[in-house]
Figure (cartoon, one colour):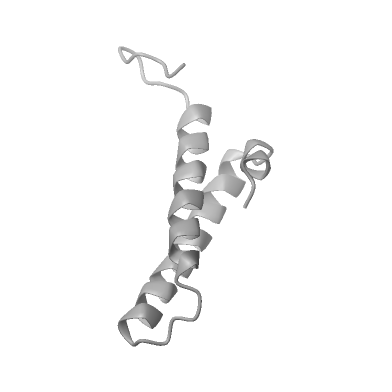
Length: 71
């Protein structure tokens, strides 16, 4: 998924997308364990998409008092 798509999502959409990506990653790991995985590169893509989603979520959430804000 393109980084631009994450920039346009709201916090709720990002949270839902993160859950969806994690579920897909879980299913791919099960397929890998049973030797039925057809697209091993998809695992790497999902991990990176999850990281993009979490990064965007952390930039949208307000920082608690006493902590330094992210640039």
